[in-house]
Image (cartoon, rainbow, N blue to C red; front, side, top):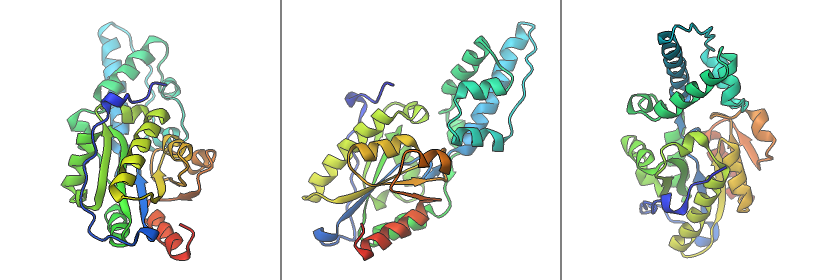
Length: 266
């Protein structure tokens, strides 16, 4: 897999931390964007539907009628959570051979179009979870393969940028859809190094995410990981990567993190 090149990474945007805590208690939570914070399921399913429709129309012009069998959203999302390859999803939808190539090409072309991006929405409880962590002096740092400008704008729209000490993203608008582990590891490594410098001392940290890329990145850099099942991977799939903890959503993870700090486990 090809990761995000260093030249594609933008400098982090930093926001002043409003509730500093003693350095002995300093904790940084590095958090992924798509999945933990943003629900992308509607956009991904609509992209799938449009990709099938475009493929059917393309072959219809050639006099070829395709036996399309569109999956329900529940079927589609369950396959995505179980990491079923897109090629197999296409096959189960009635496509084969070059039809699959055309379909996958269309998905990549349209998944980040503005009309589809507008379908993304904030996950339930996220605003409370972020505010809770911030109010307890936890440094919040976003580490996402989403285009940095997109992620920053979405957070700004929800009034959440002030809660983050740093926002790290890419210039590659397709990186988030591909979700490469080496790209996430490189980005997290940069964020960890720069945030330690900004804090003036090493900090304890957690990596929170919903995919294997997030877990691998945290484990590679020696950071305990929290897997969230509200995103694009199932509980069963994520458990295979042996995360430190597994939670249903960011609010549950926030409460666990704070309890860990209070009990001396964090």
